[in-house]
Image 1 (cartoon, rainbow, N blue to C red):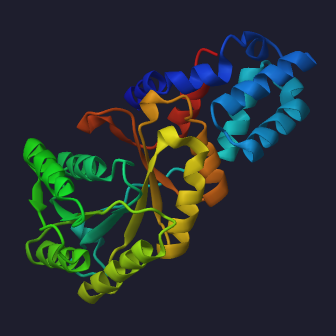
Image 2 (image 1 turned 90 degrees about the vertical axis):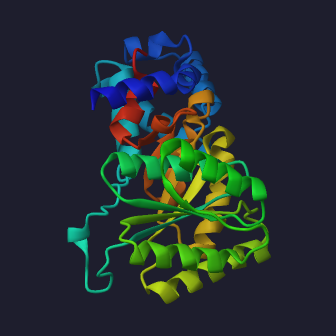
Length: 309
């Protein structure tokens, strides 16, 4: 756990700087001038917490800050309450957890998102995470629009020694997903990760294709896909909220993954996204390496934002 706290603190340094800057007076005592309050508000916007969340933070801090030894203690408490319930428990793929509806216990994960969010690399990193934890995982390349996506996933799979079923450009993505799940069931895999094509959330026809894929997967088993996770580019900040809302309306999201948080000062958007959608966050991307995809820890996230402030 200490390693996670350290990793989050290192990788979210730009966001922490955006929030605190040289604003040490806020955290040194509990009495602020109007100018200091305005400065703090500006820092919160720079970290992309979003208008509604910034207003909530300021209102609560002004009402409660004198109850705490320092602004840091007060801010930690407010962050903790705002993000309560955001931490998704990574789903079990233990065969002992099989049910009457899914006797084979296969867990199917459908990864969604717009182009450039990092779905393909995230799919490989997720598969690597579970494989490193003793799971038998199968990757499925269901992005049949871009030949490069299939090559990219296969390259990651070879590098990380992961099992992967590819596809041909122009193939029916739903049929590919069906075949991958059939293989997963019959070959004793515990998890199947399906990488889908990037699509604009505003394009009705593309969103309908996702609905078709889900209907086809349910022909394998009525419970498939149990997990519909949206991959969001963390550097886009609160602009990701509308994306997530429209994907959620279309397919019923069950989880979020935020990538590219290590190179942005907009990490505050994570809290704003959860506050708006109330969809659990399972992983965050904190770098290019496979091990930089980390299970989300609300406590580590909060400490990373205010550590040494």
